Length: 251
Ligand SMILES: Nc1ncnc2c1ncn2[C@@H]1O[C@H](COP(=O)(O)OP(=O)(O)OP(=O)(O)O)[C@@H](O)[C@H]1O
Ligand SMILES: [Mg+2]
Image (tube, rainbow, N blue to C red; front, side, top):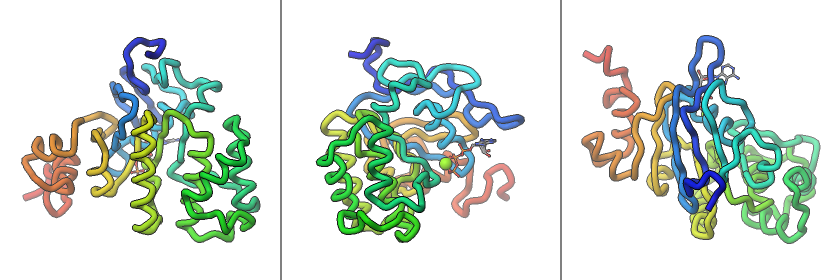
């Protein structure tokens, strides 16, 4: 299917990223299959954003390899086939909603008016197209950022906490849209701290201290942690007790 022959849309092979004394990504192997939604979970600072940036080709690994659709990253031509929604906003505050969207669409090689309209409709910003980004509410900026990520309809999406600050009604719509995209073959890796979102993923990848320490369906992760509750499973894999204290120092 892809030049690498593995059939995986996104791959990490013994991937490492070191920042001075910090081993942010510490030997990660992954193979994400097309048309599936993968949730990336883990405590603050566990390496989720760094891993996503390596996979999306926005940072160079210290060692190992990241591949998207069989192409080794970083790769400039692949940027047109990837949607990346950063955790921190990357909008131009003085540009309007429509100008921001147009900027990203051109960057990604698409300027179809219909695609831009579809993206704005999805995030319900059609009425605000002339508003400068800096005059939008926080949740609206997050919505615009998602529209900029999706506008070129890429086959691979990396979403770093896409729904932070987005109201529950729109969050549900985003997730139905992610599911529709996956149904059409899009591969999605989404970092999240929201457990009900994690439950909507086909598979979860739990990282801690730069390593994948558990991977599987939500049911598999819960049963591996000996619980029926995903939040309790999160604490288990994070090495914390039920009150969120480190197990090593818990009485
Ligand atoms: N550019 C950088 N320079 C130095 N250290 C960095 C850099 N980027 C990340 N780090 C460090 O790497 C580690 C992993 O950070 P990362 O942002 O990947 O975590 P995360 O899992 O996304 O956390 P969060 O849940 O808070 O978003 C942290 O210790 C962080 O301080
Ligand atoms: Mg992060």
